[in-house]
Length: 446
Image (cartoon, rainbow, N blue to C red):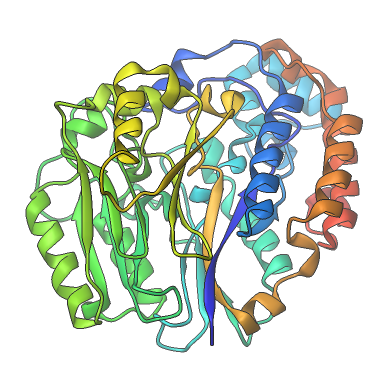
């Protein structure tokens, strides 16, 4: 049965702000406490979805989570009605209010790890929501994420949605931001590539400046949950020095599609050994492996982090051409721009580069790849997806108007204390569940 890759992008939520919550994410910390524009952020992401849908790619939408999370604030001892909870948190623990208000679920590359039915033991598409245990503002996401995934991928005969791994640093899991799948054709049995920053119980190098968020133990646990065989998995460690340079997820230094891995020269420990294992296992499945490695002499790790060259989407069009979707910042870095220009002037696996303005997301440390969750689906599985989640002209028009109705064009850190923001956000999400046909997925609707 013919399979294709679908991308499910996260809608940027109404509380999008710059609180600088993500230690290790250079952009997030450097823009801390600046003024955000939620309306612009949501529209930038929406336009990317629509453009890719117009180009013929299967494009879906994932909703924001309920923010601010009054549940988190109540769990840490704030009492009273919702407005009182927010007011007291703003006075006594503004850092907790910021965590409760984060719109970080927009980066759905961290929502889950996904394995297609052609790889799994039971022939279903498997999802494991990421526990995101390294950061409080993200560690509260996985229960809500599982609920929304269940509303979109509801057919239990075709989809299996696991619970997140236990929320401990030993099993720190950051989802698809550290996972790539390779196969000659999307519907064929593939090789799943799991990248980790450290091992909790094993030997090996570790970063010294910034935390390694993904553990080998978590990656292996997800592979077991999904029923993946040893000959169809490869586990590789990120180079600790690049984590210390701001590469907090693998998708900041590498991206893959079908049989192509596009990565930096310093992406992995024992990089040639990683290539060899991928090549051997793909050869056994009748697929070739092609590594497009960017040398340090042309693009430094610092350039890669500042431009998000590798936090790009590598997509296969219907005619077999590969497109690289990059943020505008790649054109503003002279060395990165020169490298991208060279891609189409010499023979490489990448045929075209598409540039998008995602400035609001980029200032918080998330580029095109952060905003999407890749899900390989065959025809029957695509038909089983909630049909109202697919991007088309009608949905774009409706969501564009929805954003205009409900979103502010300015949020400063002090605005998180405004109790009206909670009411505005809930009104927006309540309408969104109708637009997307999700049912009562939010706590306030129950």
